[in-house]
Length: 281
Image 1 (cartoon, helix red, strand yellow):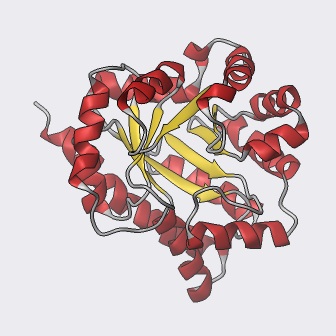
Image 2 (cartoon, one colour):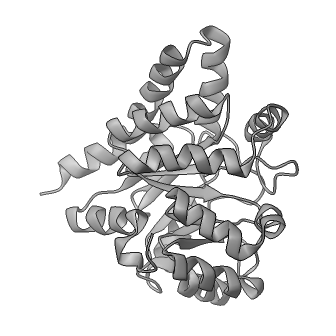
Image 3 (cartoon, one colour):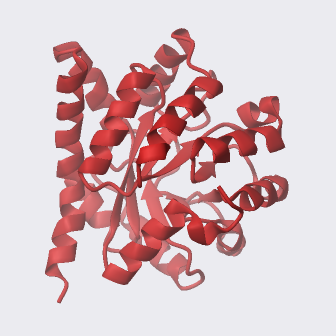
C-alpha cells in the first residue's frame, strides 16, 4: 500500500458514504476466534452483505477495555496459538480479493514487541487499512501516526466521554480514517440503551472536526445503532457479534451454519443504516 491515504479503503468508504448521505455499520470480530478460517469466512460474508469497514481484534493476554465476552474470545484464540503473523497471512489472502476496509484493534505492547516500523510495514503489506491502538496516549502517538501515514495506514484515535473538550479537539486533529468515540466509561459490552449525552457529545465534537465520527461500546442491537447514527457517521458493534459467534458455535459448530447465523445478526444491525438511506429525499 502506498503512503497516500486517498487510496486507503477506509478513507474511501467514509468518503463514499458521506457523498451518498449514508451511515456505516462497523462490525468487530476477534481474529482467530474460533479459528482463522472462520474469521476469513465471516469477513467474506460481511462484505457480501454490504459492510464497508470491519474491525479485527488482535488477541492480547491483558485486554485494555474489553468486556468479558471479547476477553473470552481473546483467551480462546491465544490458547489455539493465534499470533500476528498468522493474522497477517489471513488478512493478505482476504484483502487480495476484497474491497472491504479492515482495521486492526491492537495493543501497543504487540506493536512494540514487533518493532513499530516492522509492524506497520507488515500490516500495510498484508492489506490492513488502519490501526486502532487503545493504550496509546496522544502524547506518545506521533511516531505511530507518522509511520502509519507513510505506509498508507490510517491511525484511528479514541475519545472517551471523560476526555476534556479541548483534548477531544486535539485528538480529533490527529485521527485519520475516523474518530472512535467511546459511548460510555468502562469496558465494552452489550447495553439496552446509551446515555443521552452521548449523541450530544458527538454533535458538539462534529462542530470541531470533519473527520468521520463512529461510536462504539455498548451498541448491541438495531435500536442502539439507529440512535447512534442520528449523530455519528458509523456505529461499531463488537460484543453482541462475538457473543453470537459463541452461541452459534454451541448450536452448530459447522462453519457455514455459524457464518449464516452471524450474518443474520449483521443484517439486523445494518437495517437502520439502510432505512436512513431510503428515508433521504
